[in-house]
Image 1 (cartoon, helix red, strand yellow):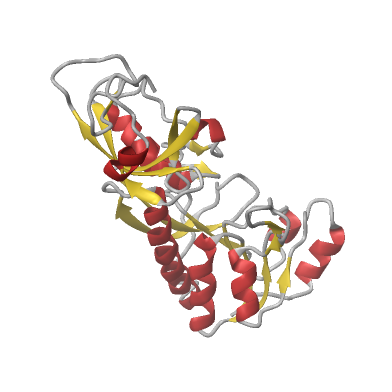
Image 2 (cartoon, rainbow, N blue to C red; image 1 turned 60 degrees about the vertical axis):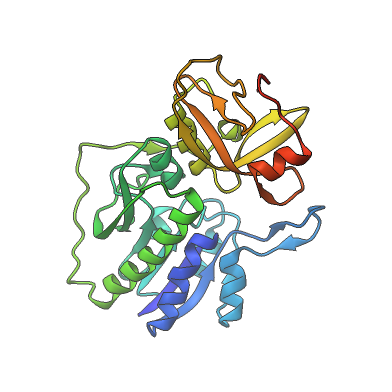
Length: 303
């Protein structure tokens, strides 16, 4: 097929690769504009999709908006694509764009729709304690992730962190998209159920601060949901990121957020968590024991 690809982060790159490997003609790649990157934030850095498309010799376009730029819409339509494939692109697509390709626009969405429509489905599924999640190939329409689904794949969450789960769903979504495009009529669009709709709101930075007023199981999910970049607590004026932790159930209850022992076990509303991989600001990831050797956090400390 003659395809326009639209995506920005690492999650979208496997789908772009799979389309090219399957022999489709990707006539252009749309991505968010380059952003400041690096330690000082001065140099403009292209998105992962932008960089990969250039490696593949695909023209890259980075409009700031379609809603306010009729020329961008006209240029999109002029590509005369069979279909547009969208994966975490980051711009709202007006109907003039959705309807331009012959077969419309297909989206790789990282949840089991209608659960977790919206911006952060993978993190929200982990936070909610869902047993499984998945990815759907959705025929896009004007509503927020309301379109019918052509194909779906599932996977257990099973203690995975967001980074690991995102990578797994990205590969699964790439395979499913190639399967749909290989037999478009054989994968009819099926309307989403009316029951079970939830919305995956964009992550607020404040949510990444560990909340020990929750049960330990919820705190552990918070750690996995925000890895990367890492949920955190503060001690001695410094943020400590927690990348992994185990849940414990001490015999005695203690005030929430108090360090219980020399292993940095931290009391929660019920139970406790014991961080296993941590990171100080500007330093590498280490074990908790390595952290405490140079940065003591003694029992009784209130975090």
